[in-house]
Length: 549
Image (cartoon, rainbow, N blue to C red; front, side, top):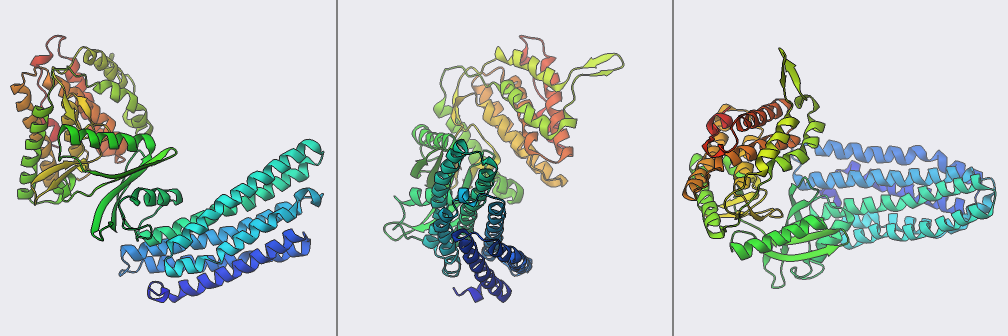
């Protein structure tokens, strides 16, 4: 696609001028290090405004185009990428000037070893000359080569750094060598700017913001599935987890030329490995519920999964946007599936949920976000009202002696957006399974219920609908508990709900909504702690009152 068809003339023209201006500045920069002279340094400094103004024009034109009503998501991403390229081209200009400024402060010029800078700076100049082609032709291979320049510059940095530090030990001219090190730092940062340009170009090409290393991980994990190494990749963002993992949908063609839709998830190796183990476990324990793993790759401290794309909608989307009939159908399928999982995987091994232990660990994050909503002990008319931390500690002691009479295999992070319903097949599927294990089923019940409540939707009809979904899950679980003669279901549910109400506020910025959740957690704990020890089986929580605002 010709660039004139995808971006305004103001962007095209000013980007061309910016690249030409930067090429001239890099030429002068190389000339300076070939033979350091103050007049060459002065010429370079005088060009400061040129690159800055041209980059500013590109950015202004990109912003104007992004604000246009007809700008779609793909075009907006391209404009954002071009903006990032312009910013980093200007950064290259500034780094060059800073490097010369530090070099000019070196009185004993020989210690600078200026000629050693010439090869890497020539490399930078050649690399910048490739940016226009990579941008115009959406050439990912060329974009990768631009990013790989950082590694070569890093090698140069390490070698010269060792030389400078060795010289420091052998001479008294430490001030000059300090300026030389500052010069080296500025030039080495050019590699970072080039990698950022590479990331911007790759992001334009694949349709989603991507880091340089993530692109290689993606290519690696696709290697066993895609038709060939040159297969064009199309990514669409699906989610960004709180643990830092990124989740995207991938479209490609397999080795037989068939169109394949998959989900790409990458991040911390431990988290991704746990997800892989969770998926494999579910496919062993309850086949058909979890997506199939298509490919897995690990690289250093990161890893990536390519998993089957699941048709359907998340339960959250159905709750918030589906018709009453669609929601009823989805709920019926969910309850049936969950009951069947519990019956199929039930073992006689007692289970300890540890809800209060979990909450105690997470309260620091809650207090950090909402310091005014978690006060300590307070006195009212001579009566001391314990703080939430004290209530949690007391509940920990009570819970330590309380176990579920059996274990089932649970999701472990049973939020609304981790449940998929396919209305065509009438099937429930689970995703994000890194916490799955044999455990107290009340863990999943309480997490699911509060994941409804914490949805930040304020209109009364939707809040009533949300509350109804949470209560229906409780009623289904309550019937299961009765059949299994689980006498302390209500008490353990209370502790699980208190945990989820309080700990979920670390993800809720709205202070009013967070206060309601923390007050519910406090009320539940006070009510549960008021039950005499040994009488937990007689306790019953007013669930409907908690979930109807």
